[in-house]
Length: 68
Image 1: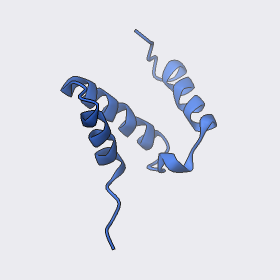
Image 2: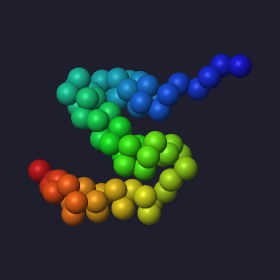
Image 3: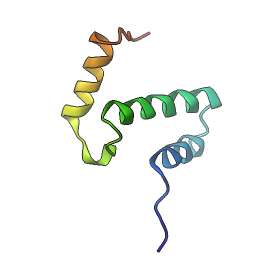
Protein backbone atom coordinates (compact mmCIF):
# COMPACT_ATOMS: atom_id res chain seq x y z
CA UNK A 1 0.00 0.00 0.00
CA UNK A 2 1.45 3.39 -1.01
CA UNK A 3 1.85 5.88 1.77
CA UNK A 4 0.48 9.39 1.27
CA UNK A 5 3.24 12.05 1.03
CA UNK A 6 3.91 14.00 4.20
CA UNK A 7 2.04 17.26 4.65
CA UNK A 8 5.07 19.49 4.16
CA UNK A 9 6.01 17.58 1.01
CA UNK A 10 2.47 18.10 -0.31
CA UNK A 11 2.64 21.81 0.49
CA UNK A 12 6.06 22.09 -1.18
CA UNK A 13 4.71 20.38 -4.30
CA UNK A 14 1.77 22.79 -4.51
CA UNK A 15 3.94 25.87 -4.06
CA UNK A 16 6.33 24.63 -6.75
CA UNK A 17 3.44 23.81 -9.07
CA UNK A 18 2.43 27.47 -8.81
CA UNK A 19 6.03 28.55 -9.58
CA UNK A 20 6.43 30.65 -6.44
CA UNK A 21 9.90 31.85 -5.53
CA UNK A 22 12.12 29.76 -3.27
CA UNK A 23 11.83 32.42 -0.52
CA UNK A 24 8.03 32.26 -0.71
CA UNK A 25 8.22 28.48 -0.51
CA UNK A 26 10.46 28.66 2.55
CA UNK A 27 8.15 31.17 4.21
CA UNK A 28 4.98 29.17 3.53
CA UNK A 29 6.55 25.95 4.75
CA UNK A 30 7.90 27.69 7.84
CA UNK A 31 4.45 28.97 8.80
CA UNK A 32 2.91 25.59 8.08
CA UNK A 33 5.51 23.96 10.34
CA UNK A 34 4.84 26.50 13.12
CA UNK A 35 1.10 25.88 12.89
CA UNK A 36 1.57 22.11 13.20
CA UNK A 37 3.98 22.44 16.13
CA UNK A 38 1.69 24.94 17.87
CA UNK A 39 -0.91 22.17 18.02
CA UNK A 40 1.62 19.54 19.08
CA UNK A 41 1.86 17.88 15.66
CA UNK A 42 -1.87 17.45 15.06
CA UNK A 43 -2.60 17.15 11.39
CA UNK A 44 -4.31 20.29 10.02
CA UNK A 45 -6.92 18.05 8.42
CA UNK A 46 -8.20 17.38 11.96
CA UNK A 47 -8.63 21.09 12.66
CA UNK A 48 -10.85 23.90 11.49
CA UNK A 49 -11.56 27.59 11.80
CA UNK A 50 -11.33 27.78 15.63
CA UNK A 51 -7.79 26.38 15.59
CA UNK A 52 -6.68 28.77 12.85
CA UNK A 53 -8.18 31.73 14.75
CA UNK A 54 -6.47 30.62 17.98
CA UNK A 55 -3.11 30.30 16.19
CA UNK A 56 -3.42 33.76 14.61
CA UNK A 57 -4.51 35.26 17.91
CA UNK A 58 -1.54 33.67 19.68
CA UNK A 59 0.83 35.04 17.05
CA UNK A 60 -0.46 38.55 17.70
CA UNK A 61 -0.76 38.43 21.49
CA UNK A 62 1.87 35.96 22.67
CA UNK A 63 4.55 36.19 19.99
CA UNK A 64 4.13 39.84 18.91
CA UNK A 65 3.93 38.96 15.21
CA UNK A 66 2.51 41.82 13.19
CA UNK A 67 1.35 41.96 9.57
CA UNK A 68 3.67 43.89 7.27
